[in-house]
Length: 70
Image (cartoon, rainbow, N blue to C red; front, top):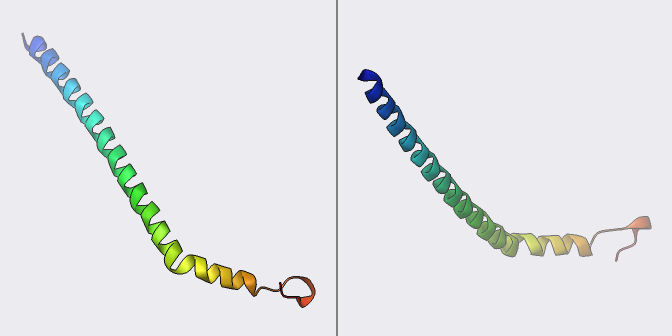
């Protein structure tokens, strides 16, 4: 009789573990998407604020071969 209850308990434990694994995978995927969107927005904001202006200035005043400026 004890082995029957043990088998039922193991089955319930397996089902709960499988459901928990699926929920953890879904939550992990959602968090990954949210973090990626935040990083993307942060890259756009930083590029517009300070990245593009400084880069264009250094490119226009850079010297190439023999000291010529282009």
